Image 1 (cartoon, rainbow, N blue to C red):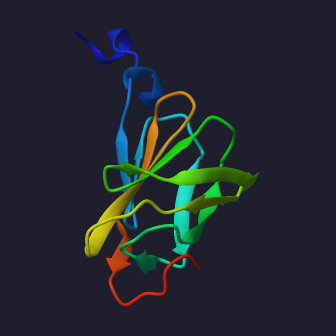
Image 2 (cartoon, rainbow, N blue to C red):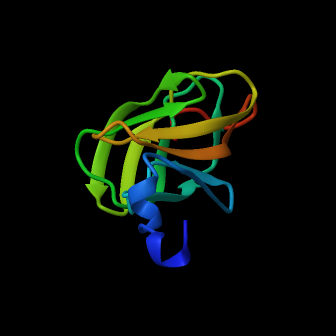
Length: 123
């Protein structure tokens, strides 16, 4: 094969899915502009039922949110940059926060939330 026979296709055409690591945020998929920037607050009580704001962008209807392996409750898309949820109960310690988009791709914030026994419950 000579150089003139080789045509490089754009990278996006070659990839079916990629995982990008950006400051603790894992994004699976290659076309989504959706991201998780932060959680406010980033901790809550092990009993759950704390209201949490998820800050980022690209949020729209049809998403699911998990803390560890447990689904969040009362998921509300406030705007394309903010989601509010109620936390499920959990075990003391850090858990990953995962948002599954309506097309099946996921956003992942590693150790993004900390369950604490001493945190006030139901903020």
